Image (cartoon, rainbow, N blue to C red; front, side, top):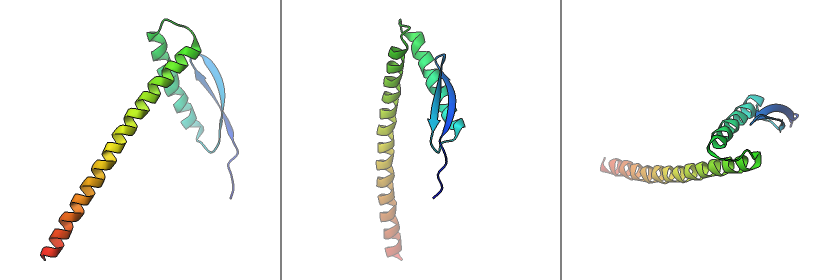
Length: 100
């Protein structure tokens, strides 16, 4: 099996440049993620009274983690609804086939 060599992608987050190693990832995807993080960090930085980049990064991480948890919960509810509807439709189909 052939492996793709790691690439380095240069990104800028909160006016800091980082070289990110990317194993088997599209550099454009890494750049997109960095832009999302930069945008969120700038939003957080505007709302706090500190210029400490570490504190801004931690607050941003907490915001993103909260959003992730909410999305996981929503995803779980959707999976349960899909399973319930699938069972319901399978039962209806069985009833229709037996009625023939």
